[in-house]
Length: 447
Ligand SMILES: [Zn+2]
Image 1 (cartoon, rainbow, N blue to C red):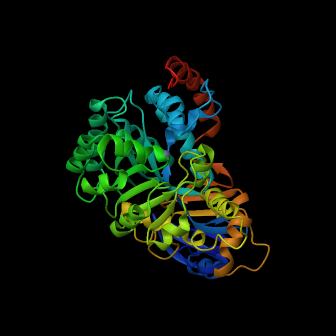
Image 2 (tube, protein in one colour):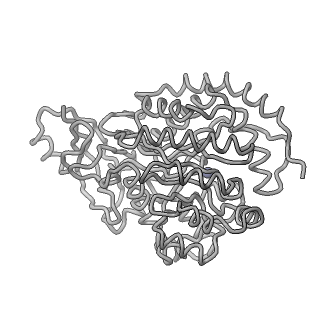
Image 3 (cartoon, protein in one colour):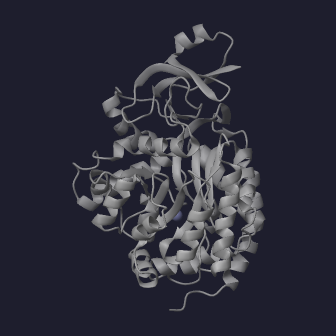
């Protein structure tokens, strides 16, 4: 059956989106079949069900290239000490939390985050997971939650030697197994996850290169803090980018989260390899680790895309924050338009590579029926040149009314249809105290 969503202002996606007022999108199965004026769609598909967009902005579903579902139960958690730097944030908060997760906690965390993604109009998400107490089979459990929620996802386990080499290899094997079984899956794929260069041994890098199925990429944190470059060099003789290159892992399917503290020649290597720098501006501000110079990276030829790194699930909020943070850093109200207007399109296009969907992030015939309707009817004229302004100054603060993923309506008139947020939060409040108890039993950093 054909369904139409409209009428509203359709922004077609891509780097220079077409703008169609009084428009709508028709889909059949999981594919868009037409984007047109609402009157034309109604005439062409008289039997179609109509989802009322109430004059809002109709966009391609958003894509998040770097998220951490497992972080959901950290909200309100007191680590019991004041971290003095990024190393202590990892050791004293995240590495204690991930060691405290069991499969029930992983599943409920995933469901909470997936609900937040749907509420933000996000239809494709890349998760970077850690749960050292349950590694084997954990990506299947997360995939099960993703499938139930109805999103598309690219999943991985962040292999790391921080708890010993056996656990690192268990992570690599979990990735390889999951990736191998999802090479042709229409909506759920895998990549080879690694934590970050400074906690990954040469043997683990070599195992990742050896076991990854052909064409599968890597997803890891890179130079989020100077610590990564410093410790990698001290322990393994070189920084993260030369190490990835030497292992044969720096290529067009390498997702490098952050990249803040890379040297100029490393940025050039990333650009030459066609790897992707994933900018996570809100998380970087929260951790006080600096910010990626997206303009310099873009000028050097890098593909720069956007993620949230567990700090929220709204890509429009991330985009707005990235834009404002650049202006704040430069103390210049003229900057911000060099790269930010194309970030969402670059993010979607990158995801399309991982899911074999070249039209992901566009609304046109044949594209995946991934659609977000934002409750932000444009109050002023809107054109391809002004869409970015409408997004960061208007839509970023508005609610998402409908979310459609691969033709399935996941949220209609602000109501989630595949998940029960109230029930999931209730379940999480039962599980969280047990997770926190295990967390507090683990030692805080002492150095
Ligand atoms: Zn991260």
